Image (cartoon, rainbow, N blue to C red; front, top):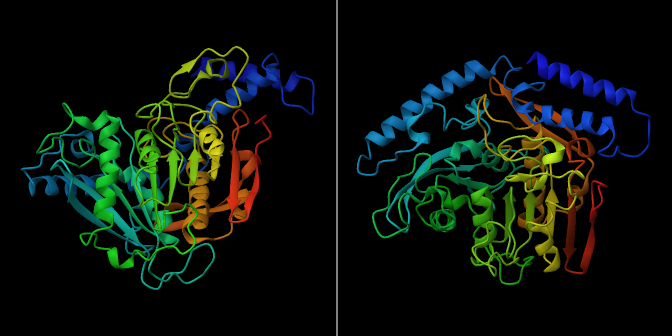
Length: 457
């Protein structure tokens, strides 16, 4: 630790000694390396930053309490369904599936959540939660009264044993603003059954893309069926002015990691989907994660929120390749790197799209994980703001202009059933390495397109 502190001190000293300039420093300048060192440090902000997990005295007590309650509930649920064993870290390890413990009092005070169980097309028992606004609730940002029925959102988790409660933050944020939402565990992850009861994929399919595409379809089947306890709150009326011809439903699908690759595929083949949100990463035809060279055809409007770093954090000279498999990059990061996975394919197809790269963000921004693994302090907040605004436009036909605002307000849980506002300046919270861009249309044609970060898109 002392050695790391000394290195950072020297880097910062170099930055102070560097000549002042109106332009960004180049990789050959000490200021560039110093700025990068700060960016790396900020990639652990969820744990160490102001108000982060180690800086909020309410966090640890809430974590202990929520972990114990969640673990007992899971053990009881497994005991009640012994013929459907879920042999996963999410079901066996205390705390794995707890999510953000500061949100433990959400259901009943800010919205309503209910646990659900449904059967996959291969006979496996899948578990999840559905969420909706409180009766008579008002929008916490605008004060407008929320009136059902509401648009729907289905969220597919990431691989490597992601679990659905890690994504409750987004489901809850959206439910508060007038959506019926759903999180669930794909087969072999979280609290869902490990093995199928019929023919499926070889072995345990939790790390196969097919498992996440079929999981998304199974979740959509459940969400739109009478088995959904909140079906009467979900708006099933056809959209009279759809953004995509033939896509008249009011449903969005959201996915992270392998789930992002899955929803990138499903949006092109399932007519129930009106828009898609991919959290690291949106994948286009031929991209890493596509099923084949013709898959993932851009069909509906897509929001891509993508990260600077993968599961680990590396310095600027290892920014080549992709965030998930970095390679040497002696000339520094390529500003176009995050465009090329999927955003460019959507733009070439003339389909509305937006790319957002939060500063210091990692692949784990979108999962609530306690006291371990890197994630930035405000990346999740910024992501929620953009998802709320994106779905507001493409599911509720609200104006698109708020997507281009330069300042945002977000409500964060801080403990004791208390949410406090956070003010986010866009330019401070978007990557200064990688392009964030947009291309939006109306019925009359192109509204606007361009680079919102001035990094050379």
